[in-house]
Structure formats: structure tokens, C-alpha cells
Amino acid sequence: MTRLGLRGAFALAVLGALALGALAAPGIAALTGFDPAGTDLLKRYAPPSWDHPLGTDELGRDVAMRLLYGARVSLAVGLAAALAASTIGTAIGLVAGYLGGAVDRALMRATDGVLSLPVLPVLIVLAAVDPAKLGLPQGEFTDLGKIVAIVAAFGWPKVARLVRGQALAVRERDFVRAARALGASRARIMLAHVLPNCATPILVATALAVGGTILYESVLSFLGLGIQPPTPSWGNMLTGAQETIWQAPWLAIWPGLAILLAVASINLLADALQDRFDPRRRAQ
Image 1 (cartoon, rainbow, N blue to C red):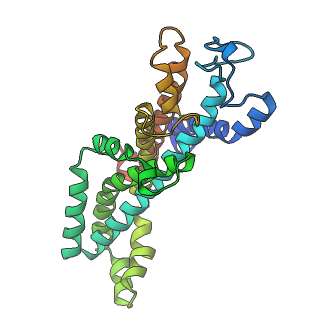
Image 2 (tube, rainbow, N blue to C red; image 1 turned 45 degrees about the horizontal axis):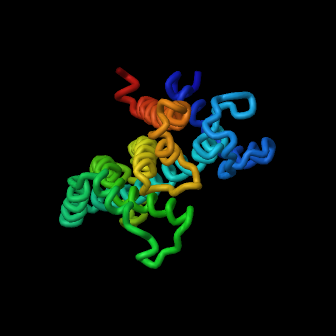
Image 3 (spheres, helix red, strand yellow; image 1 turned 45 degrees about the vertical axis):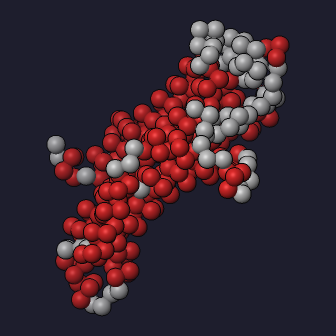
């Protein structure tokens, strides 16, 4: 059993399998000869078989291959957006918690303002903006960057509040006072002394943000506002499945199950990390 416990080991195993499948997708496509965007109208809605283990979709595309390529998109968006949001939130929370005073009040009022917004409706409105009207090129990377930017812009406040609370406690400890007495600059104290002691809430919040971002990406892609076909993602795979749920239920089952496994495993991993690094929870 790992130091993260049974839940953490299970979560790591599932996430490792998903990540390995995503990384190996091009190699698997080369070996099998299945193009995730290649169509074969003579094999539309083929049920699971030896040739197509998870069946085919409305255009005769192999569902298993599209699921692997969809993992590349959904996991990459989730990780990138979570890291971006955590970076912004960590910077704001660290400055607010250590400096305090007017700086703290101003940053926290801005944080409260963002937290008060209904996230999903705002995301839908912003995702509906056409990049071409803003002078941006259209394509797969534009869709990815748009979702990452939107989620990061509204996903940082929770991290900021956690880091601020930790920084408020750490800045009063003896080693921080000693560094201040020795003439260390504010930037050095924040980066070398305060930030390392905020690692646990940052790590847990980032893990949870990955799962939340995968859900947001799935919702936006399901509504046609996220990753655009023919590029597969778990969300837009569900879009094509909603009209054929009775005719070809596997089109909804497999991407839905992938989203469920990924998000549940990430949440389990975050909980295991919290248990591992929080001595108060370990003692319970």
C-alpha cells in the first residue's frame, strides 16, 4: 500500500491508465490503422466487436480511438487550466496574506467579486464569443487556449483564499520573523519561507481544479462551445450521442464513463493528499 493509502493508490492507477492511453494514442493509431477523424459510412453505429472494441459512431469512426484522443484534449485542458488558475490564485493569495492591510483588503474584495459570479453561465457566454471577430486564428489550439483562459480567469479565487489564510498564519511564525530581522526582502521571504509552507493547500486545490475543469470543458463542448469537431474530446463525443442514445447507447456510455472515472479519481487523489499532508486529519 502506498503512503497515500488505498484510495490514493486506486486514483493514481486510474489516472495513470488514462494518461498512458492518451500518450500512446498516436502509436496505437499507427499500429491499428484507425484514424480518429477517418470516416466509414458503411460501418455507422457498428456495435462493439473484435475490430472495433467500443463500436463506431454516426460517421463510422472508431470510438475507442476517439476516446483515447479525446483524453489527450480533456486531460490537457484540465491540467493546463488548473495550473494557470492555481498560479494566479497563489500569487494573489500570497501577496494579500503576507502584506495585509490595504493590499489584502483590495485583493480580497476583487476575489469576492469574482466568487460572486455564476461561473457556468459566465463561461457559456464567454465561450460563445467568436475568436475570429477578435482577430484570432481559428483552429484546435485556439479552442484549447480559449477554454484554458476562461476557466483560469474564474478559477483562481478559491486558491487565493486558501493561500491567503495559510500565509496569514505562516507570516507570524518565528522563522519568518527571524528572516525579517536579518534584512531579507519581502519577495525573498514570501518565496523562500511563506510559499513552501502553503504547498499543501495549493496541491490539493490544484488537484480538485483539474477535475472541475474537465467537467467545464465537457459541458462547453457538449453545448458546442468548446472543442469543435472533428477534434475529439469527451464532451463533444457526448454531443453526437444524445440523439442516438437508444440506437447506439455505447456512444454515450464510454465518454461518460471516462469523465466519471477521471473526475472521481482526481477527487479521491485530492482527498488522499489532504489526508497525507494534514496531520490533524491523519490523527482522526
